[in-house]
Image (cartoon, rainbow, N blue to C red; front, top):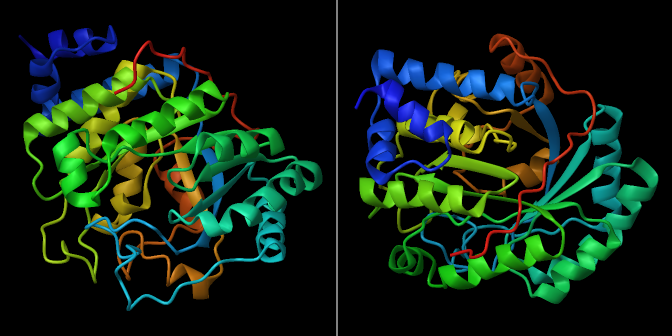
Length: 344
């Protein structure tokens, strides 16, 4: 089969394992064909402008002990923090002043901040009229329902790796439970986001193919791929980083097969290579996340590494311009995917 045959099958939405594996390995001119097709699909699907969202990292406490993350609970070297409702709302005001339509509240898996989240959601809706996006980890269905009742619109919960044994080995928790959370979120009316990490220790090409197949099966409203970056104070701190090229190929695959989702252009791309986020947009991404967390807290939210790349507004705007794209000025209409018969 030729790359044109593979791309045609991908655009039909039901690619075989063999097609995905070939596309994951593309480089050179054929990789550029993949990226060109992703841009064409993005344009035809009407999602060719870049959505900005403003993230506030409200807590770096976490219950989990994932081997790739420095915010893991066993890390006694990390100074922990939680923002107050007043601090969060003051930052949301800055997001609104910059005409960014999405307030993105992110934290480690920290149930102790749930009361704070419940307090600020209705204020964000009432005072600023922003879309509320949450990324707070696994919670009981009742908590998700409460947040939705207060006005939360969408939720991100990445599956990270699709192999149950691999997931348990690096997180010491259950992938099935995480997928159940995604199911609950969709049933409660959230727009859902998920995604995978490329290059995790112990991962092989077959697992990456499984990751892509799981993402396509979930039919998410947001979907991302992030390259693994070795993080200090973790068991994986000396492991090699994930492949930028493979990550970009996966972004393009997601765009072509799923067509309309919002695809974040993660800051880890820029961490790996200067201009990496421009490459992400050229591979089909259409979201830039601007970090509004106050600097003293940014330095403690070690999601990638102590020296992570923090995206400011001017960097986001210049990256969009360098890719020949435009910023979406209004809040995006997230197309709700039909609830799959089975998740997981």
